[in-house]
Structures are given as C-alpha cells and as structure tokens.
Image 1 (cartoon, rainbow, N blue to C red):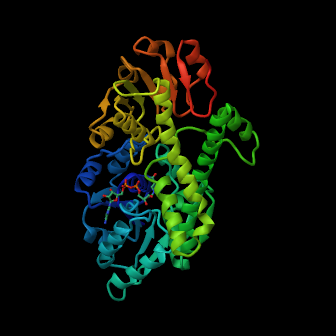
Image 2 (cartoon, protein in one colour):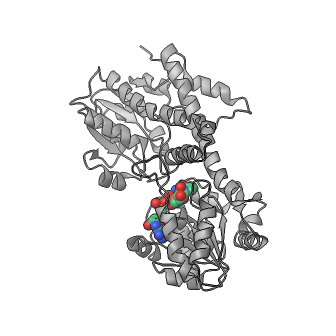
Length: 440
Ligand code: NAD
C-alpha cells in the first residue's frame, strides 16, 4: 500500500518514518522546503529519541521519500494522511484550520485514482464532515475520494513507541471501504493486538479533545490542591502520593508543579471550549476555562516564589533557569511554561541564564533576550537562585554539593517537584516548591 503523509512536523515525520519502517511505501509532503530537504538527507529537524535511527533505516530501505509536490503525492498515494498543524488563532481561542483546509485544497485536484484522505490533526468536532464536502467538491470529476479521521495520541519524547505500539487506534469512517483501507494501512499495528475503535467522524474527532481535556483536568486538579496547600501549610506532594494509592484515581498526571504547556493541551482545551460554545453547549465544558486559569496561575505563582526567595525583588539578580522545553525528552518550546517564567523574571529585572539539554537552539532563536549556557553547572555559576523549570532526568541527577560550589546563594525553586528536598536541604540549600511547606 502506498501512503502519503501531508505535513512532516512532529506528528507527520514520525508517522511517515514509522509507517515506512513497518513496510509501507511512504511519501512525506510538506510546504516547508528546508524541512523536506533535511528529512530527505537523513536529518530529523527536531529532537525525538530513537527517530533519527529509524529515519536512516527507512531511507536505506528505499521505502521512504520526501517531496514538496502535491502532484507527485496525488499520483503516488492510495491513502493520504493529513498531519498539518492546527494552532490557536492569533486573535481568538478557536483553532486555526487554514492549514488543514489548504492541505485538502492542494491535494484534492491532484488525486489520480480513488483515494482515502485521513485526517490525523487535532480539529474541532465537525471539521471532518466539512472537509469531506471540500474533498468531494475539489477532487477530479468521477473520483470517489473519501475522508476518514484517525486522531493521533502520540506523546513527544515517546513518539516512536506510541506510533509503533499505540494504546488504541480510533478509526472514524463513513464506509466499509474506508475501514478496510485503514485496517490495511495499520495492519502491522493491529497484528500486535492493539485495540481498535471504529466509529463515525465526529466521535473520532471528539476522542482526541476529550482525552486531552481529561489529562489537562487531572494536572490542574492537583495544582488547584497545591493552591490550597499553599494557603494552609499542607504538603501537596504527600497529598498527591496518598491520592494515587486509590487506583480509581491513579498517580499519572497527578504531579503538582508548573503545569502544562506545549503545542497541544493548552490550545486543544481552548479550541474545545470555543467549539462547544459555537454548538450552543458551552456550559458542558465551561470548566475547561477554569482548568486553563489554574494552569496559567502556576506560572505567575512560580515567578512570585522566585521573587519571594530572593527577598522580594529579582531586579539585578542572576537566575539560573534549568529547562526550556515544554517537557523533558523534547526540544519543543511551543507555549513552554519554562520560557514563560524565564521571560517574566527577565521582565522583572533579573538576568536569566537558561540551560536545556535539547531545546537551547530553538529557545535562543525565539527568546534572544535571555542568556544561555551549555550545562546546568555553567548556568548556575554565580546565580542568586536556581529555578528548575523542566524535569529532565539530568537535573534530578545534579549533586547539590557540586552546584553549591558554583552558585552565589544556595537557593533553589523546584518548579516541577522533581528534586529530593531533604538532600538539597542537607547540602545547605534553601529549597522551595509550590504547595510544599517551607522549612526554616
Ligand atoms: P508541526 O507544526 O510540528 O507540523 C506541522 C507541519 O505541517 C509543518 O511542517 C508545516 O510546514 C506543515 N504544513 C503546513 N501547511 C501545510 C500544507 N498545506 N501542506 C503540507 N504541509 C503543511 O505540528 P505537529 O506538532 O506535528 O502537529 C500537527 C497536528 O497533530 C496538530 O493538529 C496537533 O494538534 C496534532 N498532534 C500533535 C501531537 C504532538 O505531540 N506534536 C500529538 C498528537 C496530535
């Protein structure tokens, strides 16, 4: 089966590479020439563990190629996966659907035989039905092209495993033919016994935003508890651990801290709330605005805590910021809480020196006003306060005594509840984390 993958960013590049490794002939398509050139020459344009090795393997097999030509894509593919971005609109909470519309508009007239076009991007419910109409309208006369929806659940940092061995496959289809095509495309995945849910287009679209809303809710729930702990002297870390023993609740996504960011959760919950309002059922998910509000407050509260530990003012202070990516094992800095906090501290007059194991280059480009170092210890040299903002394992392994030797003051704010307070305090550090009691 010959597949195209339209949009070769985090999702599309991973999908294209993994599908080729699983045995399909794959053509990756993007409007970004430099991205296509990089991928074609064997370079993954972003950090994702395990993906560069698989790209080499797929290119060597001769089953993976890249192009910027939609004509070539139309000639080539039996199934076309749409993986383009759906960011938040600049002036509203709604999703910007320009790119998915453009992808279908560019592909449809180029289709040369009956093809299945499969949306993987995260979209507001109702988008697939509209795109199905657009596809019918723009495909050459007599071509019975069909649209299906197959939402994607991969996590950056685990993208290869999540693609090769997903928790589940959701196939939104309107015909047995479309289901059969998708089952063929995912045969190597289904052969492993991965559960599959076949449903209609609108349910498939909703599964993705419902899942992300649930995850965001769990994170903001424990962070709401952290706010209560801050007001009472209780310890949210112990609280979360005690809650997690209840297997109806579970411990995953129940880690208090700086909250969520990235290119998905924040924009997805906003777009969902916005879409529900358009549909006249805004009240049903009105709580998502609270979830967003709790999440945004974590960033402000983290800045407040840094100011507090510095004696009420960070002007002229040197801050070591450990982390820039929105989460560990990624170089993605879209809506990264770490960089938001770093910029707010800079705006308050601090000199902020950032270190991140993978995201330094993208952070440097997007935030030229911050300073950068190539190691955690270097960033901490002469610091008045160290702030942990992304929970890379590398930071968990820092010896408090080694860092103590280079800083100006032994003060640390653990924005991700990633460190052992006892160990840091024993090495003479003032350790603070939101929702955890202060020890004199
Ligand atoms: P991204 O910005 O990394 O990649 C999008 C790509 O689409 C870019 O390379 C861009 O050049 C390309 N593009 C834009 N318009 C195009 C067009 N008309 N034709 C061809 N290519 C075009 O975004 P991403 O993180 O890969 O996300 C893509 C979609 O997948 C979004 O809807 C996102 O919500 C969803 N998603 C992302 C993840 C994730 O972890 N990144 C996980 C699940 C779902």
